Image (cartoon, rainbow, N blue to C red; front, side, top):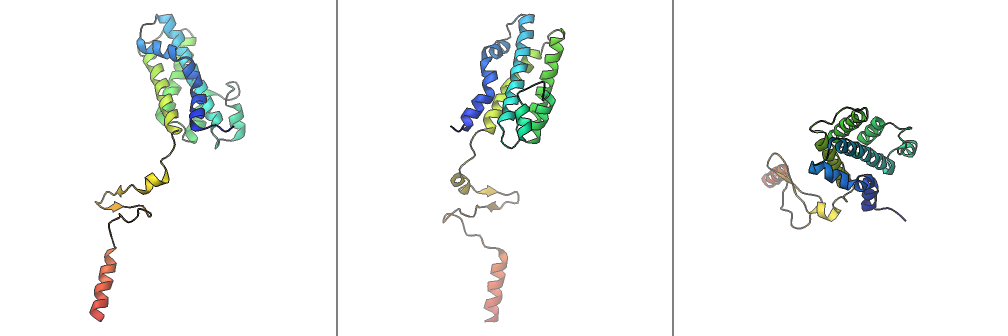
Amino acid sequence: MEQGPHDEREAALRPLRTIGNVVASLRGGSLAPEEERSAVIQVASAVEMSLRRVLRDHPAIAVPVRLRALAPDELAADEVLAELRQHDRISIELAASVHDLLDLRRRLKEGRPVGPTDAASAYQVADRLEQEVSDALRPAPAPEEIATQALPLGDGTVMYPPDFGEDRPSRRPGWIYWAAGGAALVL
């Protein structure tokens, strides 16, 4: 059975969905410092796993990379981000935020205290990842929809798609009028 965009999105976001209550707790801001530390670490790990799943499921990425995507000991998180950026699967802003979140996770695991913005940083990265994965897998508009849209150009003119139909206003190039005038003058 073939997976559709909704199935791909759900598979990629499953690690985040699994800890949805943790993200909600961070958003609520009522956790004790040790619980907050644990929650930020969990969110960072879920974000990383979701990105690894996005990488694994992308058909344009080389098969050897996709096969190593889910194994952190075979493919470092920075390499995952680099591959996803190379194939425009995530924005540069998200890649930078994830990099910062993974660095935060490392510091928290080393025993450093939780900062005042760490919880917000974690749930904002999770929200942005969810948004970008959802946007990336949203179906493109149908050709019929595109064919009916006129595109305004910066110089005040409007470009119409070739199959716009009978409703397109007539717009002939100026040289046709000059040629017709010249032909009339010759006659």
